[in-house]
Amino acid sequence: MSSQFPLIRREIAGVSIEGLVQQGGTPVFVYDASVILERIEDLAAFDVVRYAQKACSNLAILDLCRRQGAVVDAVSGGEILRAEAAGFNATGDSHPIVYTADIFDLQTLDLVVAKGIHVNCGSPDMISQLGERAPGQPITLRINPGFGHGHSQKTNTGGEQSKHGIWHEDLADCLSRSERYQLPVTGLHMHIGSGTDLEHLAQVCAAMESMATLVGPSVTLISAGGGLPTPYQSGETHIDVEAYFDLWDAARKRIEKTFEHPVGLEIEPGRYLTAESGYLIAEIRAIKQMGNNIFYLIDAGFNDLARPILYGAYHPMSICHRDGSMHRESRQVVVGGPLCESGDIFTQTEGGYVCTRELPEASVGDFLVIECAGAYGSVMGSNYNSKTLAPELLIQDGQVRTIRTRQTFEEMISNETIPDADKAS
Image 1 (cartoon, helix red, strand yellow):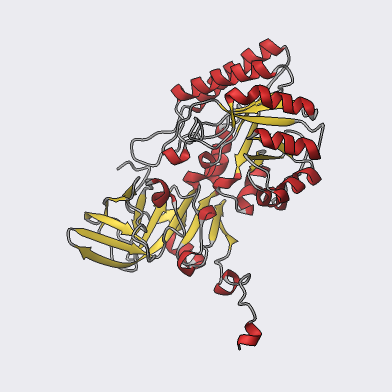
Image 2 (cartoon, rainbow, N blue to C red; image 1 turned 90 degrees about the horizontal axis):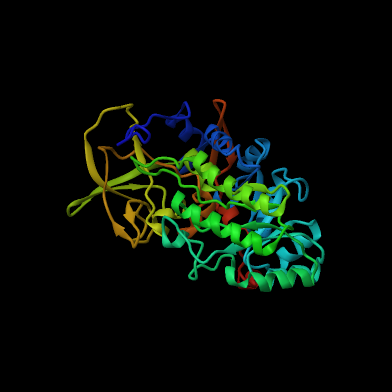
C-alpha cells in the first residue's frame, strides 16, 4: 500500500482525528482546504475553471472556490440559489453561474429567465423553451459526440445510452431553433464521462473541432467539461494535466485559426477539485465473524457515502486506534455500515459483490477513516432508516471550522405532517 493512503492514520491536515471527532462526533465529513486550492491551481492554464458544484456543494466549499477565482456550474434551480448564497453573481464576466442540464423544470426556467443566468442547453427542447421566454439570450450547447467513457457505466455521459447532451446529428436542428429565437450559440461543451483518459480525450477534441466548424464563428468559448481522473487506489496516479491542457489548447488554436478570432478555453472539474480533500470518519461499533469473513461495522452507512453501493467505488481506508498505536497486524475484513440493508457495505465491487480489505487489527471504539470522500459523499446523503445527515468540518490554515452542523431529528421531520392531526388526537 502506497504511503499516499496510510493504513494507520492519526491526523488529517495536521489536526488529530480524536480532536476532529471531539468537535464533530461520528460520522463526520472533514475537508482539507489546501487540497482544493492546490487542485484549482493545477488548472491555472485554462482560461476559466468552472467548479461542478454537484460534487460537493457546501456553501463554505463554494466560497473557497470563488475566492480562488473559480466560477461555478449549476445543474438545478437549487444550485443556482446555492451559488448566489455563497457569493457568486448571477451574471458577469465568464458567466459566474451557468445552468447546465437536459431539461428545464418550470421553476428553474422561471429562475433562469428572471436572473439572466447563462444556459448550457442539453436538449433541443431547452432551446425552444428558453427562446419563447428570453429571445436574444446567448446560449451554450452541450453536445453528445456519439461516444462516451467512464470509470463506471453509470458515470458514462456520452453515446446513445446516455441521456446527456444534444445528439451530434441533431446539431443542425438546434441551430435552426436558435436562429428562430435569435439565441446566438456562443459556446460549445462536451463531457463524455468521469475518468476520461488522454486517448479518449483526443477523440473529444476532434469532435469539438468538427462541431465548432458546423456552428460557425459565433462560438467564442469551448468547454472541456470535467471528468479528470482521481486516484483512489495505490498505484493510480493523477492525469498529466499539462498534456490534458495541451490537447485542448491545440484544438482551441485550430478553431481560432478557422474563425480568425480568439476562443476561450474552459474546464469544468468537480470530483477533481474535492475528492482527495475529503474524509469520512466513523467509529467501529461492532466486530464479528461471519463464517470466513470478519466484519468491521461502523456508524456510517450508504446514507452518508453512497458511491460504493452505486458504482462499486473503491475508497482507501485507514484506522485510528484510540490507544495511539501505530503498529498492528493486518487482517482481511469486510467493512459495513449500520443500515438495515444488505448492500450497506463499503468494500464491494460493481454489481454488489462483497470483498475484503486489508486493514490493521482494530477494536470496538477505534475510528475508521474513509478517504477520498470529498466528492459525491455528503451531497448524496439521505435520511434512509431515519438517519440524520452528518456534519461537515473544514480545515484551513490549521483551523477547524464547522461548516454544517449535524442534522437534528426535529429538523429531519420538520416538513412532514400528519393530516388532521388535531382531530386524531
